[in-house]
Image (cartoon, rainbow, N blue to C red; front, side):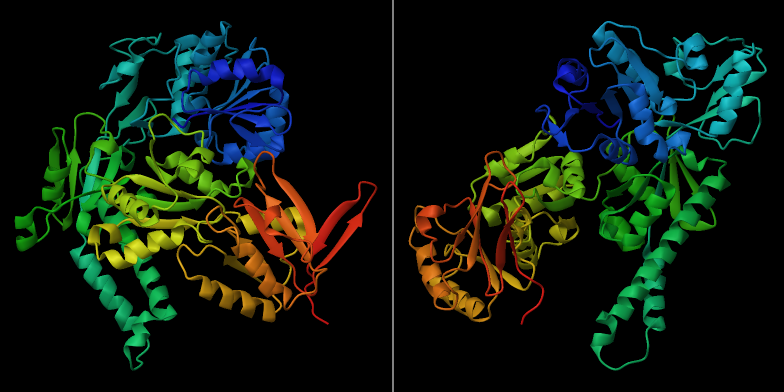
Amino acid sequence: MMPPAIVILGAGALAAARNIQALYPDSRVHALQGRVEADVAYSELGAHLRDLYACGTPIVALCAAGIVIRCVAPLLSNKGAEPPVLAVAEDGSAVVPLLGGLAGVNVMAREIAAALCVSPAITTSGELRFGTCVLNPPEGYTLADLGQGKRFVSDLLAGESTRVEGEAPWLDDAQLPRSASARLAIRVTPRAWDGRVDELVIHPRSVVAAVTLGDLRESAGARVMSQLPAQAGAAVGKGANAHARAEEADIEAAASIEARVRACLDAHGLAVLSLAALLASTEDMTNAALAQAAARLNVPLRFAPMPADDNDNGASPAHLLQTALRVPYETLHDDRDEAVALALAPLAIDPGTIGRARGRLTVIGLGPGSAELMVPAARKALDEATDILGYDTYVKMAGPLRADQRVHGTDNREEMQRAHHAFELASAGRSVVMVSSGDPGVFAMAAAVLEALDTSGNSAWAAVELRIVPGVSAAMATAAQAGAPLGHDFCMLSLSDNLKPWSIIETRLRHAAQADLVMAFYNPVSRARPWQLDKALDIVREYRAANTPVVLGRDIGRPGGTLRTVTLGELRSADVDMRTMVIVGSSTTRQFTQGAQWVQWVYTPRWYR
């Protein structure tokens, strides 16, 4: 289960929240911004709870139950898909499970209540009668049909007894009314449910489907080329039309893979819900159709190397199973399809033990430093990562992190070494996050990662799933606080000459000033080059009036951040340090003050006169 979000409104709930957090080491305490310092800040309770709920995050809210219900009520639809949601009194005196009966909410309620030395307010009839939720099997097992499960439990509550067929150790201590001759039966089996109303069928995820794609790959490629318009030149196959056709072929191939796996399961009377994973050759790791097929089957996608002799004599899914599985199993085939083989194990299989996953490298931007300015996709990537790399300062900003996540902090100048290290980890099947501040594509690690990939010629690196998640850059964050100084054409320039000659910086400054662009200066000064900002300003002053507004944002988005506006004539390098963003306005940039508090705004109109 995903670690819960422990949500509080004020300081009075913090002590109880920390006690609950001790039960779930990877959990975080979420607090209303401005009221109390915790692990994660949020600005509006309703929106925050709905975001957590929509992402499937278990919620422990230390506030009135009615507040929680009203907040998430618009999202309530599918009982079988809701995460656990609990309300806990601020002082820890009451624990009330609200939602997620099929996701273990009552188990959480008992755990939290025991830690707080109170009794949980459990109202679920089956839970109270039998001491467990029969419809909530442990990880690795799933109900065949929720509707039938509800009817089954209703029959038990009405006085029926049951027998248990198959391995169900989690029910050993349950107070079920048992009888060897009972009409009703709880059956734990990978076999497909036949619709009998006197059975509660629970499927262990004990089947692995291995597939090989030779014929699919060839037919899909041929179909794409045959559907392209007959135009001369190699450029035809590289155009948007070819890309669209390739996507169509992937969708069609994914549907075909899914159909073949389902047909093989049907041929042996096995339930699709008993499938633990889809297995393919590492040679097909970048195949989009495989990923789509696994998603359609709702199982993890895993990979194993094809034995060398198999490559000579034709790819065999049975050989993939031999390479990947570490448990006893029975091999099953469909005589009509040699591209699919099934492994049927006696017990549920942990997908993490099957072969390996496709490695992933996600390059993220943390934004300027405030947690609320980090985009949700970046936070999600951090939460899912096994390894986190970056400049030490930025890695610390990315926290809190889980105890099981590996952190690889380095010096700020080791960009290429860091990129190489990230690819090595990801190519071994790990989920890696490369951390930058601001936006990763603005004077940050995205370019270094792509350069490392471009120049490596490493096929294992090329097989890594690479994603770049945008962030709020320092220029954007500073501009937003000042108003809209970047409201018209602008450019971003780094004044650091560590990676380019100063002569190039001067040339670009002069052209940008001549073009009347607003300019955002990154890396404006440092101890090693205190003179460069003044030199840059001398160039800009040749083209800009002395009263041109200049915005100085220092540590924007971080504690102690400051913002002020000066004129180009007033500005000196002593006003700036390495942590300052300098935004020099154009000839049209304006500033004004407004209101009793004399709030100052800077903006660049979207027109030229």
